[in-house]
Amino acid sequence: MTQLPITLSRCAISTNVEVDSERAIKVVPKSHDEALNDKQLVDYKDHRVRFLSWLLKVGKIPEKAEGYSPYTVYSTAYRTARFDLWLWEQKGGYKYPPDSDDGAAYMDYLAFSDKSQTSKGKAQEGLQHFSKWLQHTQGRDEWEFEYSFDGSGGNHQPEDYLTREERRDIRQAALNEGNIPAYDTLTANERRGWKLYISNALGKDYEEVTRDDWDRVDGWEITSLVWTSLDAGLRPNEVRNARIEWVDTKNGVLRIPKDESSKNEGNWTVSLTDRTATALSRWLEEREQYKRYEDADTLWLTSHGNPYSSSSLRRLLHRLCNQAGIETANRKMSWYTIRHSVGTYMTKERDLAATKAQLRHKSVQTSMKYDAVPIEDRRDALNKMG
Image (cartoon, rainbow, N blue to C red; front, top):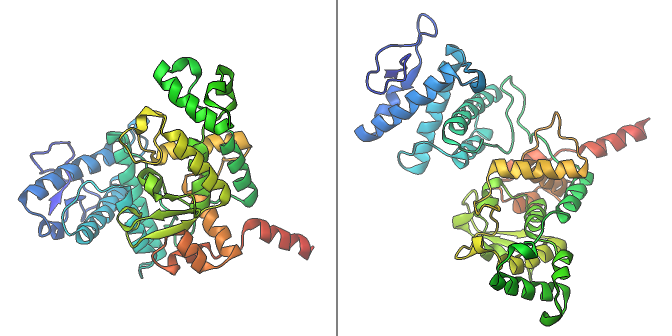
């Protein structure tokens, strides 16, 4: 059993941080020694020393170099070590550090385990501490989960969702997003490509397209991304992994193959509205004009040519909410907020089976967290009750 030193030394593991008279923070539990070979053990120990030391010294408020209490770090060390061992068993071998998809898979596992709600909540808190370390030291995105567990013993549930009115407002705000490149920013060769696109978009002959027509055509990239997410409830990693071959605008569906689906359980066919299918069709035509998509089959990239992350999607949602006049204070508004709204209203309008298919859940039990009466329906009931 390896225990945590006060210093960040990676060589000598000798000085313990005492939580109380009987406990010290464990860097590598003895059970993990048997799961790792010598090289993996050295690598794992190195990461764990840096992670747990960071929590102790600055983890609570990094900007003020204020760390968590030794007791909190003791608990986090124990819970994250259990997660690590579970992950290696699932992956068939050592992996470190884990990523957000691994954390989400663990939360799915815990959701339907026999563990208490308090235990589930504490495990999630441990992963949030780990995510915080990766975010501040390695520039990783903050981990987001589809639902939250109450560590004090409450039930797990979606953290927030958009109301019907908010969904309409977000859809409208997304329609107002996006521009094609300005005429003056393009080379002569690029203008020829955009001129052809504009002629098709406006239904004008190529030779009749003028410089002024550049101002009459808007971009469809953000609109298609947001509208597809409003229909399909795309997870952040599904936005990141989306490929052009997923899109079937003729039949109005996304076809997500097994090897690229978030949960990797099977092929998924996800319904889209006619509006979204049109937006995707227009985007696929427009997409061919951008250099950042050359030799790439990624459906959406940021303006810098990078895949979308949880953080960039959260910023996009907040920007849309601001434009739509949707209050975000005291709400956890992440990209999952859109997904939660799909689950909530699909369950209300159809049934859990429809929600399971649309949101690509492995089990209908996962869909059951959306089996609740939306807040506006409850408000209507109260008004009728007098």
